Length: 302
Image 1 (tube, helix red, strand yellow):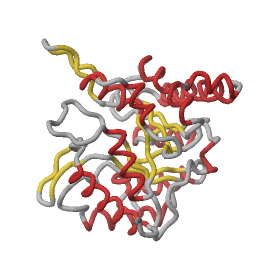
Image 2 (image 1 turned 90 degrees about the horizontal axis):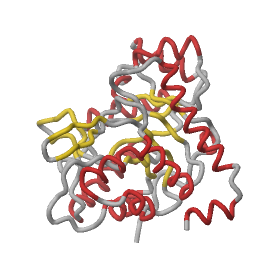
Image 3 (image 1 turned 30 degrees about the vertical axis):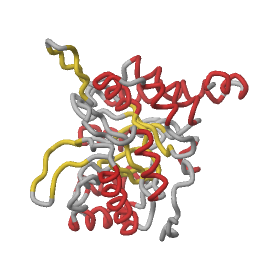
């Protein structure tokens, strides 16, 4: 039997973001322009660790942005899959930031990035085993208990398959949601990247994700590494969204509905307007779904 949670578990996308236009990631080179120009986007997503120093210039800029937009905090350093547990200091800083910003959403990754004594600058995938599931659920529960709110966790990008996996990734994710009361940040680019690299059916993956657990969708562009053995897709967030990702996004909208969506672009940054244009492409697809008769949408899903 699952014990009652000390916070309200995820029950679907927040009303404040459910019908908001697509958001964009807030990155330092764009911040001053965002403040000055107030581009027509639905919300801003900030990497939590960049704002841990409360009162710093970046933090004050984030709070200024918060006056005009809903803000979500997206972490990259908690290492939720680490067997040694989430770091006390990192969690303390995150909790202080969440208290100060009161973000619309808080999210992290289904991944690990180090041990208590060593860290790596990457988001490494987990083996889909019962042991790994127990570990990440314990860590997510600890984070949520400290923050006194649910978080969203993002599906990983993968480059190699583990031997001895005990369940498929969608089942692993569904178990995390069931045990912890968190929600899913469904990264469409990560599904496309992993499907290419490992060789699974991306649409079948979407079909295996339970409805009602997706709280946000990410879109991004990947980098292609060309090797003698074939191309490897890298989740680099340094290109426009590829056509294959847009097509998979359409399928996700048909299956999960008009979920809050965000376009990520983290390196080789374009002008701000190009990022806004990418977000507006997503808005057109979302609007098309809303204008599709329900029976026609259901037929596509089936």
